[in-house]
Each structure stands twice: as structure tokens, then as C-alpha cells.
Length: 238
Image 1: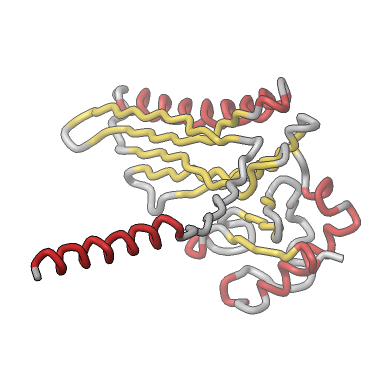
Image 2: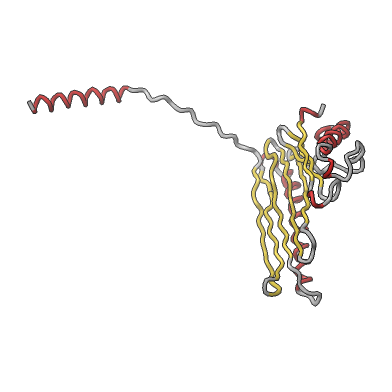
């Protein structure tokens, strides 16, 4: 009896093995991964100088350098712009240190540069740089924004006029005014001419769907409301 049960077990295992062997496993297609021709690399720098216990000057920089072999020397123009911005922040920090080490007395200061990428592909990069500064004794810290939209194919910093056309600037401003009117308490004015004297040429960023306009604090609103950022659908610009 045991022999019969053993043989039956072998037969069942053989059938299962054959079934498994002949089973077709469906192939899972590999996910397509988009490879950009523009690579953003962090340029990092930090330094701290102490003047006294708890009093120091500090600087922290994380800046967006670019690698894009397809566009040769045109990349240098963009990276030189970033180097200039980095150099300015470093110089301001060095000034803080010089004052702190002099007989004028020490003040704690902190400067920080960060960035956000909006587009980095197809020979184009659009990036927002933010510099935050805090100085002891000052009532409030300050934040300054720098918008860079750069055509690596042409080796050229683009203006808003280049992107939307000179004839569409009035339309862009009208769109922003309409957004401002939704929260009039935030702004000095929401009249139709409130942006007439505001130059938006190099205060914009771009992705596939939106033009984003950045207006620094104090320009159209009190400091307490900070910088003002407006998104405009490209399809709404005729």
C-alpha cells in the first residue's frame, strides 16, 4: 500500500512539474525613462566665521550649474551667469566678515542661496534662484529672487518678450492684474495700470504649461506679503 501511495505521489509531482514547465510567463515591458540632454549639478559652498560666542557670519550656497555636451561652449555662458551670482553672495559674506572683525563690532549674519528648476531639457533651462539674508539687528530677513531662462542652443539669456512676443506683454500684465484683484488687500494697488512701471523682462520662468512671473517683495506689495508669484497658462496667452 505504501508503495502505491509513493508512486501516486511521484505521478502527481511529475504532472505539476510539466504544467509549471509549460506555463508561459507574460513579459513585462520595461518602463521608458526620459533622458534629458541638460543635466543640473549642484555647486556647493559653505563657510562660517565666528567673532564671539554665539556671534558669527555664515554663508550657504547650493547653485545650479549645467552640463550639456550637445551644446558645446554655449553652456559656458549660462554657467558664467551662475558664477557671477555665486561671486556676489560670497563677496557680501566677505564684507560681513570684514565688518565683524573690525572695531565697528560684530553682527551675526546668514546668507543662503538655493534654487528650483522649472525646465531642463531640449537645450533649454529655466531656473529660479533665491537668496535669503538675515542680519542681526535688522527687523526682518530679506529674500531676493533671480529668474534665469536660458537657450543653450543659441547661447542666449531669454527675455519674456523673446518667449511670448513683445505684443503679448500687455496681456501678461492684464492676467496678473486679474489675479491680484482676487486678493486686493495684499497689494498697493490693483488698478489696471498697477504694473505699467514694472519691468517683467527677466522676472519669469517657464515649464511646458505655465509662464511663472516672480515680483520681488516691496515692488507691488508690502514686505509682510513677500515676493509675489503668478502662474499664467500658456494657452491663455493668445
